[in-house]
Length: 539
Image 1 (cartoon, helix red, strand yellow):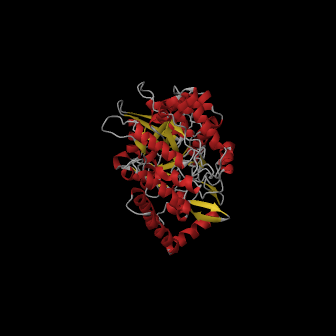
Image 2 (cartoon, one colour):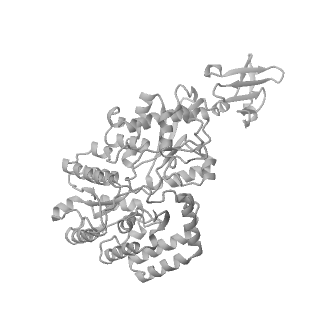
Image 3 (cartoon, helix red, strand yellow):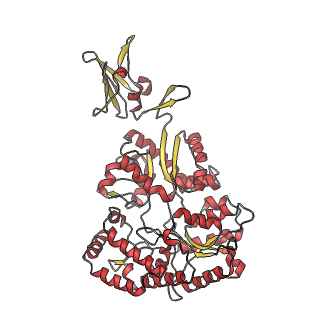
């Protein structure tokens, strides 16, 4: 114990050993006892035959007790039937949970190896697919089984009480990490900083990293079509492609637009609502008030466009029952003309499919889209607050400091484009680094650097990114609605609205039914209460 930096004291009268570490960690046990007291408050027990004892003038305790100490790591070598005991401060190992796609997962080992070699930290990365990530985190929270550090997407997913029950208040630790403190001070909402407490570190990201229409540019070129600028032009492009581009075989037709829905939104089709309402989310802020776009005429126009496209065979007839995985399969099969993708997803999909020399699938995001010639162009925008990194409360303050040092180092590399330069990562390796530490820009460097994209295609992506960067919806959307809806409040009320939207699109309900619903909704007392709470969030 002294070799690991502990000051060991022996109380002859009580026959008790106490070991105290400078970090504040301590453990004490009595000779012959089956229990040990950790940090003066938590007692742990072993079997009777594993009790502490004295042999040849030395006090011996079970390795299990040692494994409880956050300053010491115990690893079991099953093959050699031996225990390896290491000083955490000399060779710390961190378990990190992050959201990532398949390409990033493939680059996971390269990032772990780089971190261990250059930083001296052994890092066990837990990469979870995006569509399952939130469910995975919820299971961890329910079970109390946390990694050392994890990402939370949408900082307001959990209410104050629940968040404080599992996330460490980092406010007293940030003094030693000026860069992390700067991130928190510049975006306190994403850090859930309030009343002196700070529960997270904001993740570097662009608000424009959100799903937006991406088209098969190779099909546009084949048919001599220009990229559409309005919804009428987009309709014509989809209609032309569906009628003139054969499916992958004679029995399979080409799909104009595919996607999947969520229980609380139209999911992959929400961008249509955005184009018509001009707001990238349901709840807008205008003239100091919260506006629900669901009750607007623009929302009705969006449903009319979708219903017309569905009736004429331009929308995947299976969309209401599809999952993210099945949509991904359809895109990989080469049957679809348009889908809502982030700029990174579009680039990764293109790069992956073009590895097959017989494929020329080229997915290019639109630089902007208007409801009509008289409307302003809309661009992608993430309506949620940016995510954050949290350290669970089970992690000791000593180890939390080591984690913050690790995180600051990685985030600084992101800010300085160090992952592209210092580590010389490309393709999957860079995708893994970006999944872990975020991105400092909008262009998907991981995909572009590791692909054989033509200069023209790279120019198309840059054109979209440049156009998007000139538009901001800051102050026009309510970003913290999850603090209400994540608890399940108004779930039934809102699910009825989504269900009716889908029925209208599929022709199972008429626009007149939708108008009646909107009228009834605004008179509903529960709806009025919801709008009052949302207005309070804005204030």
